[in-house]
Amino acid sequence: METIIEYFSDMPTPHRTFLLVGGLAFFFIIEQAIPLFSIKYNRVKHTALNLFFTLTTVLINFIMAFILVYAADWVVVNEFGIIQWIPMPIILKAIIGLLLMDLIGAWFVHWTEHHVKWMWMFHVIHHTDQNIDTTSANRHHPGESVIRFVFTTLAIVIIGAPIWLVFIYQSMSLVLTQFNHSNIKMPTWLDRSLELVFCTPNMHRVHHHYRQPYSDTNYGNIFSFWDKIFGTYERVDNKKLVYGVDTYMEEEKTKSLIELLKIPFMGYKEPIEYDNEESL
Ligand SMILES: [Zn+2]
Image (cartoon, rainbow, N blue to C red; front, side, top):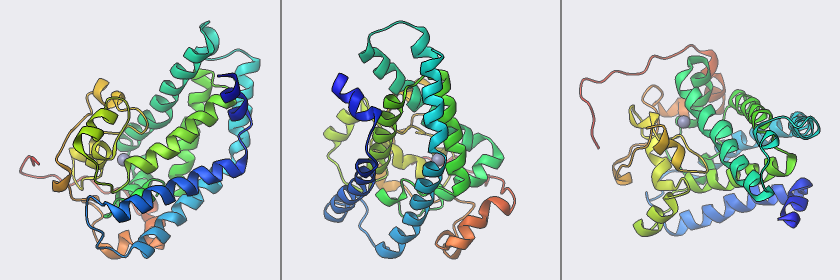
């Protein structure tokens, strides 16, 4: 445990870069070999667009990283936050800290983005992707990257997370989001076993179905049980899914960088109401 803490207390930037690039490359290759949906779209164009948003996400997090570091140091010095207040062994601090970082920094921010109109206008860019694969993981409007950063900082303060915990969380969060967006055909037994703890591709894909109520389910990123606890869990035969978001299905818009960047400033679009209660 000591060695892990030591490593993550000062995780070298090249290692973080390797995780981002290596993770993407790893899942990208598996998708190419065993895809769930056969790849009929232009993969180069699709990847280029999603990588642009990945780079803006990295850039925003890099520019504001000093705030995270400051918050993580502040909670330790001032013994502030849940895991600082309650005495417990270091391994428990790590586990409880990770769980709560995922709850506040991923599940809760994501749920909020689906329920607060102005946040949804930024988050919808993530949902406009009609071909979900591992490159979709960080397809976030720069405005959404800022929103997520604010919630991560808030999580650090509430939890009392030291910097090593923040780095463990961010590393796991990155790999899990690349994994659960990937277009990989996995054996059911493997998916079901992993899903006891983690958000698998089978679970997260449902969230990318083009219409409600499915797009308002499975908000989780690392751990699968938040959705089960809060009643937002849904299981669906993935082959029946249609990716995208019904309010923005026009291809010219969902594949244009400029159009996507403009969406949050073009006014809120009310969700489409359907006569039939769709069942998949
Ligand atoms: Zn979403």
